Structures are given as C-alpha cells and as structure tokens.
Amino acid sequence: MRTSTCRVDVALLDVSLPDGETLSFARILHSNGVRLVFHTWHTVSDAVRSAVPSAIFAQNPVHARQLVRQIADLTGS
Image (cartoon, rainbow, N blue to C red):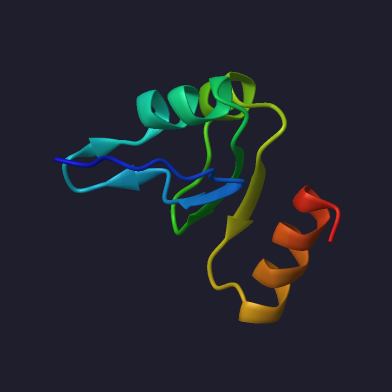
C-alpha cells in the first residue's frame, strides 16, 4: 500500500459542528503550521480566539470574495 502526503497551507473550519467544536483539530493543524480561517454562524468565544490567535474569523453571512481575500492575506498571495 502506498501512502502519500500533501502540504496544507490553509484550512477553512467551522467553529462548532453538530458533533462538537473543532478547536482540538484546529490546534493540531496550527501546531503543524497550517493557517486557519474559521467560518461560522456562531459567536466566537474568547477561548477559541486565544487558542489560535493568528486565525481569521469570518462571521456569516460572508461573501466568497471576502473569504478569498482573507485566505490570500494569510498566504501572502
């Protein structure tokens, strides 16, 4: 069996999903150098903001152009 790896530069996550928060997963991604954009309908708690202070938080409704601009800002594109 072959396995392959790929480099992830940016992850787009929701803060809260029906089966729980994504904060643990976000911390893992962040510790591996992945930049994060949280896209959510929910109010973002101080705990989430402080856990990943470099993340960008996009409150719904958000336009696609805004998300593209935020991701470009994170990647320097």
